[in-house]
Length: 76
Image 1 (tube, one colour):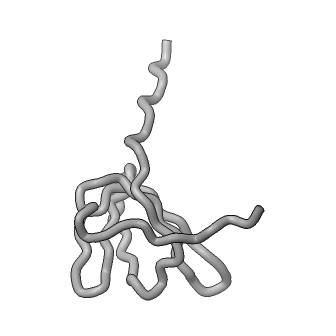
Image 2 (image 1 turned 180 degrees about the vertical axis):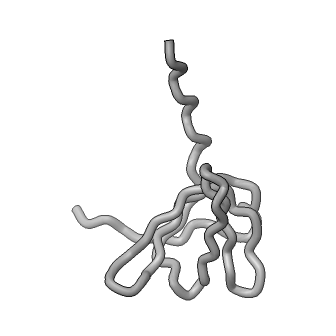
């Protein structure tokens, strides 16, 4: 069964945690984080390490809202 690539996010998802896949030279790149804004064809996604990724709408091949990351186990 082949995977289906779908863009299932809108500007209404600003503030939600999303996962994206976009075309880059030589292949694809993924980003997971909070959708901070979507203006003038550019999505801004804040990753958990704090970096801000800017993604052009034209390069998106898949995107969807995902649940919050599970808490990490504490060290004993």
